[in-house]
Structures are given as structure tokens and as C-alpha cells.
Image (cartoon, rainbow, N blue to C red):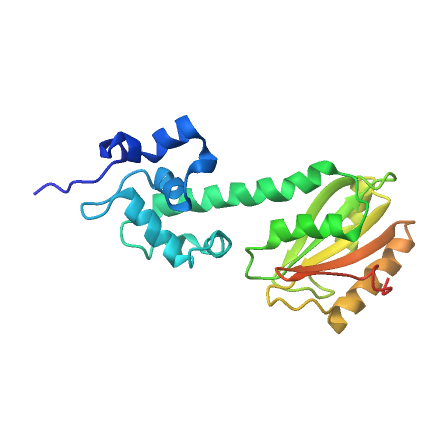
Amino acid sequence: MQEHKYSIKQWAKDDRPREKLRYTGAENLSHSELLAILIHNGTRQKTALDLAKEVLKLGQDNLAELGKLSVSELMKVKGIGEAKAIIITAALELGRRRESSSALQRELVRSSSDIARMLQAKFRDLRHEVFAVLYLNRANKIRQLEIVSEGGITGTVADPRIILRKALEQDAVSLVLCHNHPSGSLRPSRADEQLTAKIKSAAALLDITVLDHIIVSEEGYFSFADEGLI
């Protein structure tokens, strides 16, 4: 017997998420309806909306938690193959990039909170630690945000030479060091303090100023500058 898949086209018109989005706007769709559009087809036993609800449940009905799931984890839902899992992952990444880029596009850095909001959006779904650098020009406008290492921060992986070479390439006059703490803790470690001092000293030799080192987590942020540590 040929397997029958439930397509969104077969739903009653009022129940079709794509029709609903077109005529009433995306903001009027539930999370599961938006996911159903991405999933497109269901299986013999389940509609795309059924699968969408299961995917959401896997993410504890929370989009922030859903964004942390890998392709293989999404595929644990029966009916979500690799292609569908990749589409969902790509859509969530686009949303994350849109949120983080809105702060970057404002360009002018006025305070640690400006940077923290951008970093929280960019790093919130990461399960591992990343170390990044913001390169700024004389007007305190962001020239580039660069992730220089992942998985931890030590003097070997966050090499001041690499960071400063990039600063010269970008014609940057100041830097903001940034990293995330997936654990939620916001207190800097001794290694954080030592690395900050090392990069600050090396940058000073090139007349480049390290303005701040900001640590972010889902709970908030910690600014070395605000706390008088830089």
C-alpha cells in the first residue's frame, strides 16, 4: 500500500498556515503553524502541524531552547528527516542573525549595554564558549565583529597577535573583547582577567585601546569597564 502524506494543500482552507500567513500576516500564526510551513509535508499518520507541535515539545515549547537543538536532535522526532531538520535549523539561525544584526547595524557604540544586547542575541543559543572581538573606528562605530576562538578562552586560542593583526587590517583604533558564559555565571575568572590584561598591554604598543571586556549569558552581562577592571 502506497504511503500517504498529509500535505498542507489538503487542509481546509481556513486551516492552511500558508493561506493564513498570506491573508492575515505572519504575526497571526502560532509557533507551530509557522513551523508547519517549514515542514511542509506530514507523514501517513501525522500532519505537518502535528509534527510541528512535536518539534516544539522537543524544545520544551520554547523557541530559545529549540534554537539550541542540533540537526540530529531534531531528527529524533519521527517524521522529521535530515532535510526538514536542516530547514528548521536554517530558519532559526536566520532569526538569530536578524536579531543580532539590528544592533550591529546601529553601529555607534555608546555603552556596554548596547554591545551586551547584540551579543546576547548572537550567542544565546550556543552551548559552548566563544571569544569575539569588536573592532571600532575613531568615532566608536563598529567596523567588524569577529569570533576569534571557540570552546574556551586561554592565551593560546585567543592569541593577541591574531587579534591585533586584524585590528590593523580593519584600521581599528579601539577594541571590545567579548565572550559568553553558557553556564549562566557572569563573574570573570582569573583566566579572563589575565587574558584581558595581556591583550590590553599588547594593544597599547600599537596605540590601540581596549575599551572593555564584556561577558554575556542569558541572565545578563558583566562589563570590565563598568566594574573598573580595565
